[in-house]
Image: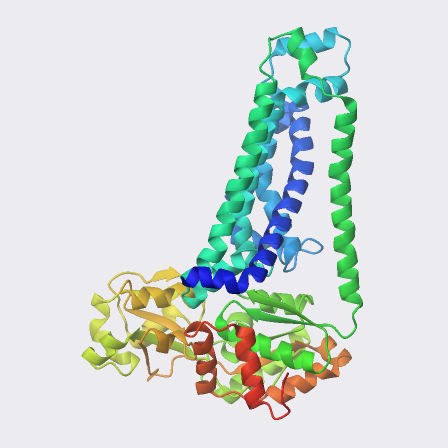
Length: 530
């Protein structure tokens, strides 16, 4: 019932995300076919290159999708966050089956058919267009079919770099421990893949039936395509590509031309989304045109801010110190704040707000039942049980200088096996279900109360402070005074308890981050929000 109620309430957003997903796949497939088909044809004429080119496009498909997105982001022109990078990545993934099947289809044609075509006086170009491509069409289409199904699936990952699509619901559902959200993204994505597969399979079947004719000259005559059909098809494909490029460029030019426009970013967890919404809504109250680029994974927010793809986003001083600046750990909050403020201004031309009023520290969490039975209050209390326990941590915690290795040494923890590494959102589920016995979450997370988890005190003061702040591009602040006013207005406004309650409203009560932000602004901001 939760699933159907969600669909009924959010069908408008679901249709929008489905459309975005389709656009990503369609544009990527047009590019992949536009590149892969000529490349495959060229390889049939230059066989010495086949092994190298097919090997290269094969390697591209073996690169994990999220890694490929990450590699493309810093590249000029084709990189950045959003749909552009996602489309390039999807196009690269789709190349292998298209190129390979084009080569296989053309080279699989009987030699006698080609010889008959030449005997009739056809040129090489005529042989290609009137004989080889028609006879190889079903094999080539099979490659397009495989590439399309792959693209529909991989496009869900594109949500991690702000490219929209049905992956938004999947990532959001995992983060919020909400199966209805996961299904709302997964089921339409699966249906799109099935529809694409069925449609292309039906076309492929018709082509196969069309070419079941006697071999030799009669088959050759049947294989010919009318030049007008070829021309119209080619012009239509080129027109779609050019039209899409022109629309894309026009939209980008319009966006760049909005002097008062501010792009607000957020990371891919509930708290960052809420803070991003608060900033965005306050800017809109000031009359500023706002574009939201939310749910960006890892350090994408920082990369996008420095590259100019976003203008402001919420961050934490400890993360800045350790993950971005690569400085040694420091537990003095004032010193950390001063350090990151000066370094960001010097290195990145980015200004930092005063603290929003709370810190979101790493929270070492155990099940409430275990804490009560074993009288666990501080992290040091875990040491006697560690050999029998299993730990689970997010990828970020496992890789950071202030993460697992230093934490284990500081508390002399020797777990039964190496900790399981997974998405941060999944660690909460794993702990609550008994798959692991200890995780590193966030101290303000609403799931702590929802799942009856207990945060253990950092009695050896291992973790640096993680004060919540806003980071903004200096260039944007200079041209938009409203952003500076909003940053000043929000300083010191949110307590740790308040932030935990806001997170719980989203994760526990299933409210949207936009509604939660609006309600908080209405109650907390002195000059009433809208």
